[in-house]
Image (cartoon, rainbow, N blue to C red; front, side):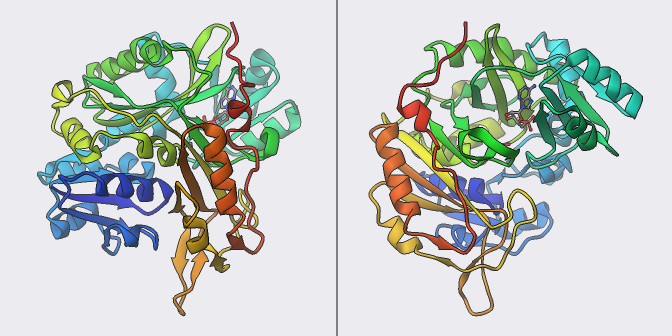
Length: 415
Ligand code: AMP
Ligand code: GLY
């Protein structure tokens, strides 16, 4: 099977590493890729998805990021006859428009935070009064995880909304879970649940980011969590999208809060999460290309049950100076070879590039996702941080507490 991956961040590097392990993959391409992906796939210069798929003679195209999905890349590829893992623009609107997502959830009877869509300051004031503090204010557009503020400070909430159409939500209290589900529009195959760390600072302080680290599996999660979420949340949403004539084929990512009233949806995404993919895929023993192809061809119901490694994975993101504000780019990255020598560690490239002299430099906010697989979370944490301590980036920063509370048994599900 010839596979083309579209994208060039940490998620796509993790996808390429997992696809490489699938013996059915005879050729692997990625566009635009990055210097880490170049070690496992043939890079193609960026271009229109259909042209790339033709150049790769792809049997399967996997679209990583949300932007091309929302813009209709999967529709274009399907119209040109390619098998695609990724939803149509109409189905990807579940991520592209928070208001659309809320409407689908309401119709499907899926538990989610109460909300109001606000187009002007008067509507905003009424919604903040009604839904109360902590205030949750989200821009109603794609924002790479940075369009959300959660704050007790009403002035901060109002400033965040200024000039945007926003969704104001009820605050959901409880540990967060990311559950990735592969679906072909009717069958649903869940992957292992993971937890992401959204805030930039230790102990969940500072502004939201795209994600500063993740781990899987979740030793504290109730045994029936995945079955329960598939039954009460994901399957009804998949059915509702199909009913609307926008069947979702690809990766439906449910971002959940486990509240006193049970799991509730924070958001849906239309693609693999970043950095959760970096911890979920290394634990998957089932060949990935075969799974994604089964979804792309509408044959997921016939796919055998997934097999998982009995291990734990932790990834810690190293971000550049300034992130999640304006990141400084072009800083040299050192120590990656020494980091990769730590047992169980893989250094996933997110925002890296080669400069004119061939040096590896930072090219974005999230630079690396240092990923470790070990017997348990405590061991995986230790290896990941040992590796990180060998890496040098001027002004680089990372969280020290990824998976710490989980490894120490300190996370409790309310109710
Ligand atoms: P989103 O982009 O919608 O995933 O929001 C980013 C992050 O903001 C989430 O992962 C949560 O940590 C937080 N958040 C979003 N919505 C809520 C909510 N209704 N209640 C509590 N926290 C939220
Ligand atoms: N890790 C959060 C996201 O991918 O949206």
